Every structure is written in C-alpha cells, then in structure tokens.
Length: 362
Length: 266
Ligand SMILES: Nc1ncnc2c1ncn2[C@@H]1O[C@H](COP(=O)(O)OP(=O)(O)OP(=O)(O)O)[C@@H](O)[C@H]1O
Ligand SMILES: [Mg+2]
Image (tube, rainbow over all chains, first blue to last red; front, side, top):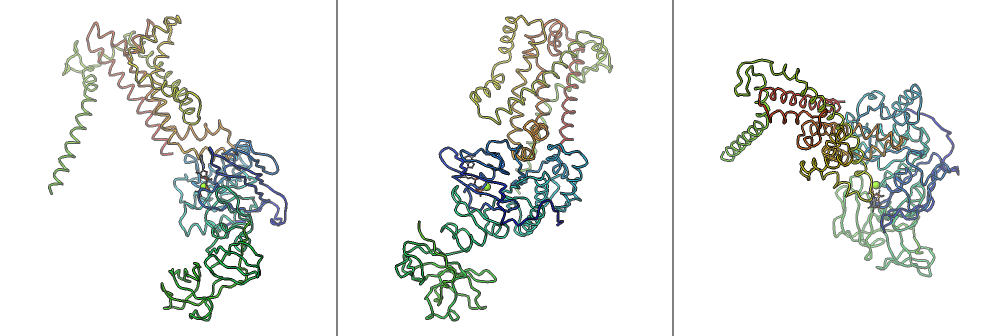
C-alpha cells in the first residue's frame, strides 16, 4: 500500500488533543437502553475500538457519532464542538458501512468523488483526489467499474477510499470485515491499519471480534449491555481486566469466584486454594490458559491433581478443560505427539501466580 | 415414467391455458386492427380488401383529431402530476410517522374501491358547484384521482425495496437531504417511477367512465368520442381510431420500458 502522509506524525498516546468526545451519552428505545451513560474520548490519530457482544450498543454508539441516531441524553463533541443535535451532513465524519453501501449507479470513481462534489471541490482538484485515494487502496485500475463488478474485498476498499476522500475528522467503521472470508479478513485488517495510519485519521472501529480489536487498536472500549466495562490498551485489557466480564470476553480464561482470607490466600467456592498476597474480601481470580503448566511432565502426584474433562486438538497446541478441586480450568499446552490427554486422564499441574489477576468485588 | 408423463401433460396444458389467455387478451385488439384496413364501408370480419382509407378519414375528421390531441395532452399532464404527487405522498408514507398516515393511505387507495360511475357523478356535482364544468380541470382532476393510487402503490413498493443505508452513506458524504433525493433516491427508484408513469398514462388515456361525466364541448377525450360516435354510426372509422389508440399506448409502454432497460444496463 502506498503511504500518503496527510497530517502531523505526532505521538498519539501522549497528546491530549481529543477529536471525538462522548459525554454521558444514552440512547433509550422505549424503556430499554441501547446505550446507557457512555463516556469516551478519542485522541487525534488514535484507533479506538468498540468491542462487545452482539446487541451491546456498539452500532448505536457509532451511529450517534455519525448523526443517524439522536442521543436521548448526553452530548457528542467533534473537534471540541458540540454536535449532539447537528444533522449528519454537517458533521465531519466519514463512515464505512457494514454493507459498504456503495452507490450502485455510480462508478468506483463516481463513488469516491461524490463527497467531494458535495463539498464543492473544483473539478480538477476532485479528479486528483479521487486518483490519489484509489491509488492509496490500490484500485486505480478499476476506477470506471461499477460496484457490482467488484469483489467483496475491493468493494470494501472503495468504501474506505470514499470515506477518507473528504478528509473527515473521524473515520467510523462498523464491522467492516464481517462480510469477508477469514483469510481476506486478516489481510484487509492489515491493509486498513496501514491506510489509516498513513493518513493519520482518528478512527472509531466497531467489532465483536476480540482478535481484531487486540491486533488493530490503540485502545479498546469494552462494552456490555450498553455500558462501558473498561477502556484501555490491548495489553491493559488482556493483562488487567477490570471486571470478570472483560476477562471472560477477551481471550480464553477461567474465572474462579471465592474469597481472600486474612493471610492473603485465595480460596474458591469449591475449595481450590491459591497462595498469594492479596487483600482480604470476596474476589474473582482470572486464570489464563497459559498460566497453567504441567508439573514435571504432567505426571500425576506432582503439583495439583487435575482430571481431564475434555480436550480439543488445535494443531499447534491442545486446549484442555480440567477439573481441579471441583473448579473447571482451561489449559493450553503442546503435548508430545501420541500423548494427547483423554477424558478421565489425571495430570499434575501448577498454577503460575505471576501476573495472576485478581478482581476484588466492589 | 408415469410421473414424467403427468409432468409433460401438466406442462402442455399450462402452455395451452397461457396461450388461450393471451389470445383472449390480444384477439379483440388484433381483430380491430385488421378490420381497420378494410376498403369497404362496413365493419366486417374478414375485411373486404385492403386500404388506408379509414385512416385518411380519421386524419381529416376534426372531432377525432381534437379528441386525440386532448386525450394525449391530458394523459401526459396527468402522468406528470400524478408522478409528482404520488412520489411526495409515497415518500411521506414510507419515511415518516405522522398523525393520519393510515387515513391518507386509505384515502389514496379509495378510488380503487369506489365505482368509477359514482366518482364521475360526484366530481361532476362538485365542479358544477364550483362553476368549473366548462374547463379542463374536471377532466384533469378526475383522471388524477384515478391515477394517483396506481402511482402511489408502485412508488411505495419501490421505496420499500430501496436500501436506506445508501441514503445514509450519501448524507455522511455531506449531501443535503434534497441532494440525497436527487442523486440517490430518485435515480435508484427510476424503474418504479417509469412504470408508475405508464400506469398513469394508460389509466388516463383509456378511461371512459369518469371522462364521460366530465367532458364538455371543447374537451372530449378520444375514448368518449369513440363511444359517442358508435352510438349513432358503426363504420370502420372507429376501428381505425381504436387502432391508433392501441398503437399510441403500445409505443408509450415500449419507450418507457426501453428507458428502464437502459437504466438497468448502466
Ligand atoms: N431502532 C431501534 N429500535 C429499537 N431497539 C433498537 C433499535 N436499534 C437498536 N436497538 C436495540 O439496541 C440494542 C443495541 O443495538 P446495536 O445495534 O447498537 O448493537 P450492536 O452492539 O451493534 O450489536 P451487533 O454486534 O449485533 O451489531 C439492541 O438490543 C437492539 O435491539
Ligand atoms: Mg452492530
């Protein structure tokens, strides 16, 4: 992909220059809240991902920023101007729709040029910009095609070029890869990231795919049932989930409910004890698969006794669900060929307490 | 083997039924057209000889030529107006929730339910009260009332199939609402608009029942003129006029269909 520099290449993370800001935004449909009191800020040039399960309000949030849905309360600011009640065509956003929404009666070039015509760019400047954008997404040779004559991946790139052509302050993407097959998805993900970085545009990106979120985002907004559960970098979200929901949603993990006693050790409700140095009170422990290790080759009699409930061969490794002291734990290990654990096998494991995440109950 | 036979029998009888239906639809028109080329003085089948005699007669007949002109321009006027009104109404019904929406919808479709004769008498009385019977307006309005339900129905169907996300995309690309309608909505529902126009034209051009009540001296439509003429005389002149009507209607339909076809290719 061609690099096209359009803005300052300032360090994203340290700036306090917020392009998009949502202040306590809610959206009610009847009595039910699609979005309930969301606040978030996107820095200039940042790629912010809205991640959450189906129906948690991601699309609604994005559409409120674009102006297609009016918030029931709260306010939305773009470049520090209150845009809460402004019409969509007066907002400085560029959106890539899930279905791409390319105009079927216009050529690829016509689609990309449409926004510029509305902005009353003179003809020559417009043509130059269209050309530039199509080169950016490597579609210059298809400029005169109709959208119906393009593949899914090509349509997606046209949609991106069209949205970026008008140099929006914010790029909005609603699950842009959901209509693509798995391989193309990974490729488009990289391409999109590259394009977005090269033009340095602030981006709000909606997905329910955690891998997409982890690999692409500067920061992730994890949403659940219309609320924000946690905002943080992919590392923060994965390593230090703020709530059991976040832990469970991002990556595989086992959640153990229990209490921390005065000695600082954790005991789960089923009786599994994990030594540590935590403050007393009810708590939930997050155990990632990689924190479970076979002790001394996994022979029973070493470490904790774990009975295999079921195992799933993944190729590079095997994911095993274990029963340890009445708690179910997920482990991911590479077993030697021919020694895959079977249902009912007993293994010896250790729980690594390094970086073990304990979520205290509020 | 047996199933195969039954299948074939069914297919054959299906084709036969279709052929009969088409024949029954087309035959009268065909008959009229064939008879119009007669060189004789009476309307007979088979016609005696071949000539363009009766077409020349029509051409020289001022009554029929004025009526043809009246019918044509009223039909064109009605199509245009019905399209504008029908689109506005269909758009409002499709897009907005407002008080009396159901009522508006029912009202727009009511001419389909009311017998045309009743509609004609009603309109006649109304225009008599308004002292407008000696103008073109009764005819125009009467046809408009007849055409709008078809137009609305067709456009409503197009609108409900039309992808609203495209309009959102346009709006996101800074197009004002009017521009969205002009550059996105209208071009995309053009096939619907054109078939609505056909409906309107044909409805107006061929109507007798309502027109009969609303015409007056200077503004007689062709179908009414034919009706009046047949009352007193029955010669091949009517066949020639009717053939002209059929041809005009067909040409309009073909032209508009060609437009739709062209739009689909582009
Ligand atoms: N126009 C509407 N009327 C009523 N309820 C709505 C409307 N739009 C959305 N909702 C509800 O609001 C909630 C959030 O919807 P939203 O589309 O934002 O979810 P989402 O996070 O984008 O989900 P998905 O991942 O499935 O796309 C859902 O429960 C949905 O049913
Ligand atoms: Mg969604």
